[in-house]
Picture 1 (spheres, rainbow, N blue to C red):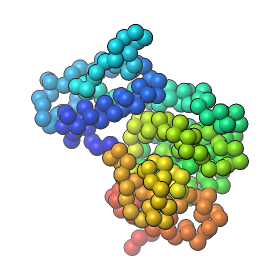
Picture 2 (cartoon, rainbow, N blue to C red; picture 1 turned 90 degrees about the vertical axis):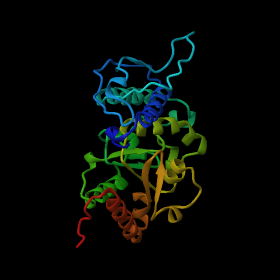
Picture 3 (cartoon, rainbow, N blue to C red; picture 1 turned 90 degrees about the horizontal axis):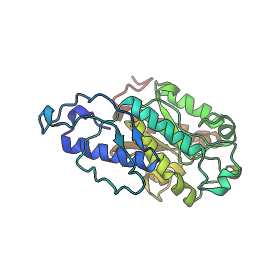
Length: 269
């Protein structure tokens, strides 16, 4: 997300409304009171900014829907963490996909810090992830860790999640309705984490996130956009385990992304 200090009041309001709507869809009804943040506005004097207050995200039963199109709500880090935890608890109880809910050991939410510079989005949890409750902890996850390290970063520096929060039986591909059921959770997670860049790992992640039917080979090597976030598409680590000759292609993709991020490329002369 762009630096709030460089946004006009209108732009900041638009981003805020998107986050509030995502939180409302995630089932978050209230946010705690917080001191008003000191955010300068490019098109309005500071005293015109509304004071922060407890923000209801869903009207009470019987209450008419509240149109907050003119409200500027800036969520604090603490509020975003609380909302992310509330979403995680809601995901853990989700039964939208009976075939997945009846066979999973547990749901697998994302891991990583808020405001991560980079977020990796994969396909779905596998057997190891289903057992441990964390994405990318099996053989493909170990390879992803090496890719992250090769980029000069650490796993704990990035955010990692999947299109699905449940393991499909037999590690089959996610069905379109399953991806649609999880879409709300994915979008709300990204809205709360606010990564600056996204990397889609594999065709399933890329096609679902970007709404495309193109293959990875057609999507990789160039940049895409998701809600204002720069996206790079590359091969899934599990694919590289079966096709190690494509590791060079992934490294080419990551070098392009690092250059776009303004980060040094390890090993470059």
